[in-house]
Image (cartoon, rainbow, N blue to C red; front, side, top):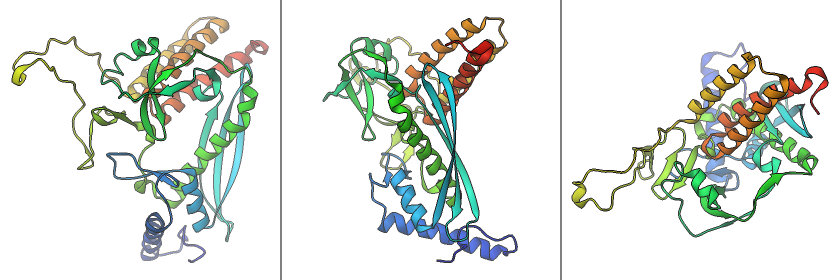
Length: 326
């Protein structure tokens, strides 16, 4: 493999650039068929055409193309022992030491999996109810909910109340590694220009009894033809031949993750412009963060991260004023 297979030189003519771009794609495709393994190096989401790259798969690509990832880490104090880690992964050629590109990723101890303890669960044999999204709070009060386990959404029963993690410092290294992983995968996809070979996050899809649902659009995915069809609906079992009208109460309007983020941004804009005291703003931010955290199952990783990052930034800003709150 040529040492400069990744990045065309400025003086390279168009034909050479196209040739090397094609070669990169061919190498990745061959790795997919001969080296990379499903559920180990990449995950396949039912109803989609492209796999999702996992960290171990990105490492295989980095080894093949002789990539040298270098990390720059920024740690922001969020108060009460919480911290946010932002990592920038810059990739160089291990043979020429040329900079090839970069990607960033973040992780915070305020994310649900790190912030709380308790609330253990057991997996049931039941399917996820079709009305789960509309009645999520109702099911939660009954002690049930949906969780993603091994890339599959399962119906679970919670065994206890969750509480703030008293040993949050134990999560510092885990959060750092997670931010590095996110940055590394983003940088690898960018440098190799293979985002077209890999699909969106696994979090964008939900397994329901009706089939695989795209959580961003709400559409049911046709797994046979690999394309979205219509939104999943429930039927009235008492209607003979479908002749009786459906008297079920109308369901609340579905909001996409982007619409939820837009609503949150509006609330944060109003909060920043308000004349509330610093303590009042912090109290309001805390409630917004808790509400956003409860919506995690309904959001994509990207949308969840954008919303949480802005709130964390404001949280740190208000704490820093007048020497901080804690």
